[in-house]
Image (cartoon, rainbow, N blue to C red; front, side, top):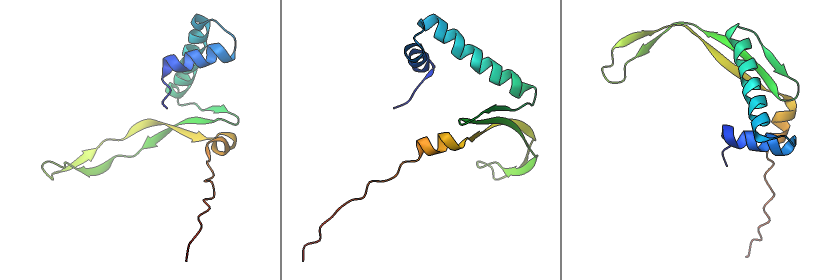
Length: 104
């Protein structure tokens, strides 16, 4: 199941017992705060959830797959996310042991 922005607003509204309009404002404000901090090359740390940072990619040579010509890929700044311990543990799925009986 995928969760899009409107689904997230609905979950927040239900979980926090808010009106959908208020939940949408809260979600939007959260995204804007994270975005603005990253625009300023800052870091956003949400303990247990994870850390948002920016990373600098160096310029590097690449190859055009169509013409096989070598090109220069410019440097750029990209957002990164490192999940926290609590999130990692919540997502980790331990496979159930399968009991198979072998007949001889």
